[in-house]
Length: 389
Image (cartoon, rainbow, N blue to C red; front, side):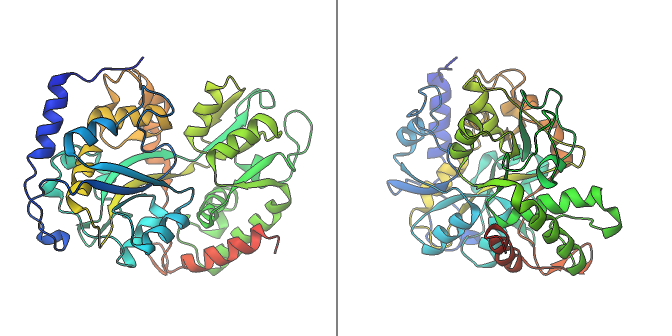
């Protein structure tokens, strides 16, 4: 089902890249034109986010960019948001595909720069949910270009669950699964402090008396209740996962039957003929909306701007969504993409956009109740929980 890009479209892409002008090496607000590339662009990305056909020749959105821009794409994969923040702090990279639990930390830490959206013609095509989102826009300033989004689904083994589970309780609370056996040792949890929000979301429905209005905004009482839930969950968890490919192996060979996951793992397992499906339970779900952000001291700003424009190309957006199981931030990418297919965006959850509580970094000052527990404590406490404390 490989789709061949026409020469006409390639020429249009090349001209769009070339028409951006010359670069001024100063802060983003003063950059008025972007011109010939510096020869390379280094990007920190989630696994599977930047493909050049090595895994499957049909999925390649790097080769043509390199030909059109003369910017060689160098990728450093990262498995967690914390790893991305750490790498950006080192200062050796131009761009990062940051999720919401990293983006605000990078903005507050002044590790990324404001983006001049006038230099990105396709910015106007971005879905309104993400163009001015709370995790990438501060005081009206844009600190990146949205890339893809998706829900954190409940993935399950259909041999165990003949009917889709309706609640996250199957991973949060001790009990028997439909096969009559306990869930202990057969479920997983995410290896990242942002998973506290998943537990908070579950308690929003389970214990409404707590008054949780936003899973990223917790007062001390609410936070304690969430930690108590996670500590009770700890003995059930066979692995705290962060590597998507390892989770795929765990569902294939290690008897894991239920866990929060990304559509990427669901699609991979289905492609491997495994008995796997996914659902968004009645409590809703958290999710990720990733933003391509530019380092404050990027060494290759021209190539970086050219990549950000290229990343919004409808074919790139559609092909990536088909590969990763995500949803494009450019809605037009959902139509006429051979790899994504007619129902690809629907299958990947585009209709659920208003049900998803997208990752963002918890802050001390919050809208729902004034003062909340900051992310620094989330990190410390979650590490302790993983360690059994």
